[in-house]
Image (cartoon, rainbow, N blue to C red):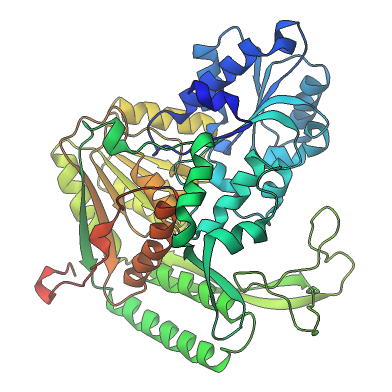
Length: 520
């Protein structure tokens, strides 16, 4: 760890659950005790930016291991709280300032004027899309030393790593396009003609890994914690209910017809992805379609030299934005738009299947963690659990921080048997290693998010002999194709980081079982 303190930017890319928080905190301590300005009494603070649900976890770490360090953790949702945080910065009253990513953007006007000693980003893959306002904001903040923590530095393509490298060492990794040209393999999209990143440039991998070596620590669980139990993957195939199947097939036919008729249009990929998400929802439960009216502003798109819409590298249109990066829509005429929303309802074949498995495990005295992308699906699941008399904890984007802490504690004390969480909220930062089974009603769109969710239970302190990961898959649905999409991108990312083996190799030959192996 000492050699990392000699470089300006440090990437802690250990697998989830190996103590990156502790390592980053120790680096911060070493920097502070060795800095001559700090020794002389100068105010040189540390800024820690984390996901919203982790800011108090970091505060507790500093309180436990650095009790003499003046630390402030603040919520920036209200103007009053933002004022408290701003005053704490202006008055130089603390040594360590902890806020979440959304708060960073709100307080950027103040934070960018401070000369920070150390800038720590937890779950740094949040900035992997270089075009987002969050990614741009972190690169504005000035700091002598920078540390990025992420077990999954990129999710879909190796070119996403550039944003993190540019944050860590902006004078070295200056140009995205130069990085992409040298280290990323591309291919031309046959329909739209833009060049798409598809994986690492194998011939240049040794050079890239050599450049990353001085600044990166990446340890795999198999090397650091050989005592951790292996993961055992199991796929449970589920037949959709007759009503679900009818609606699914109709929606799928409409989508394929529409894509075929509009395949040459720039926005076809965006619309197709939206429809795929709808198909994924229908594979979960019976949909109820609700129509509503909303007012939307017209927008302008940037044009290339030939007067065509200029897409980004993923084929999405680039909207005209102002100097603050906000999409320009104010003052433009608004149009009335009819939108159709999907509300998931019972019956649900997947819930039938998962309840059968969960009930059996709970009766055996085991604890289970269950994930879905969709809040409504978690709500339906919890209704089922309550009816069955199974003690559970629900964690979604609406869950308060105090409730999150209580749920995590009660789960550790085995007062509740099931943790039902939404990916975006419960997929990171939680320690649920008293459970030995994690179930997925559906998978997230990136391998990164899925591995993070699995590792809520596959981490230090796990005492089970085997970890079981169960996927509930709708037969003849979009569920199957999603895994291959994630595999393709994740293999490239692991190659880039120098990993010698791949996760999820069981999915490479994902085949649907014979009729008698399917849960109906």
